[in-house]
Length: 241
Ligand SMILES: [Zn+2]
Image 1 (cartoon, helix red, strand yellow):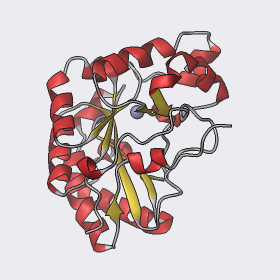
Image 2: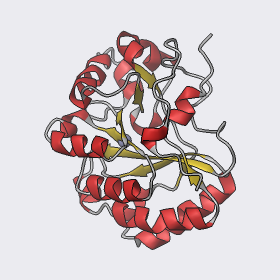
Image 3: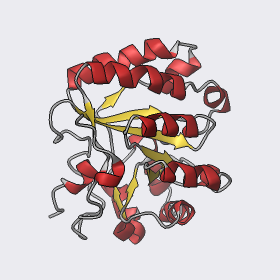
Image 4: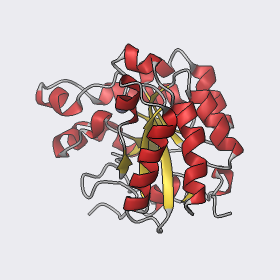
């Protein structure tokens, strides 16, 4: 089948020195052709479990980048997502603009540390994704206190702004065709999707990521794509100089 199920992945086989890196962006560009890594941001939300259950049934292990202040109140969802064979990632405590925060001299490491505590006893290093992908050397340096138990920033290669589609009332099957076309063009890489939307309750309430996922995955399989866990990308990262 070519689908790599999460429990079959040889975790952890990471060099302990792999940690925060600033260049090149971690996008899954080194994956074999027609290999995708599915990632979902901003949860947990009402669509998180339906997405996780569907993907698990398809033998696909995704990564859910959780927002700490929401995850803290929904620990049962986190446990179920993990039990379904998926990976939890750290998407900060309150989804701040990290570059601005660091410029203002605020402590950005604390929110990441608190979120890691909420995610619990998951394998280290924890995959980290900066909100909006806003990442630079200053942010990496500011997160040095928690670098030893995280790896990232995990960026993406395939993104069709699903959140904007929910804002605009676009049908999930239409959004699925956008991602299908982009995946065909990009051929491989990390796919960015949202099982919730931080900071915008209206868009969050309109989220149809479960329907999108159920429409998209069969399209991608029909196109010959296979799915790898994020571990495949992390394990292949070059060591920092
Ligand atoms: Zn986000």
